[in-house]
Image 1: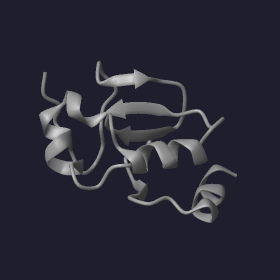
Image 2 (image 1 turned 135 degrees about the vertical axis):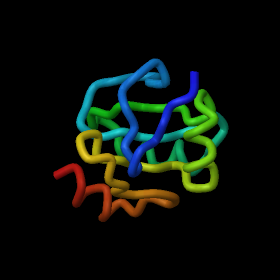
Image 3 (image 1 turned 120 degrees about the horizontal axis):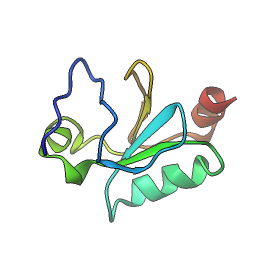
Image 4 (image 1 turned 30 degrees about the horizontal axis):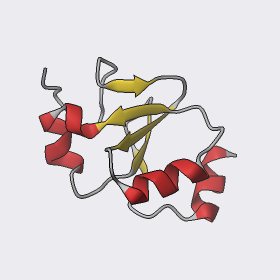
Length: 92
């Protein structure tokens, strides 16, 4: 199933690995930057999405993961290397 990404917004569907929050974390297996970013986000409710499950997401976010999105607006909040101060600003 391919997902249409419109203006950076991603609808909820079967690509979700885990769903629980107002933030979406785009990731992929074997991504050390993703693991580092997820460690900084420990305890924060997130929708975790593996981009490799959807070719459309790979086209948009392939070189950009990890990416943290606002689940309501689809706005990219952080991508690439997550700075601890930037994460604190977003989650507090």
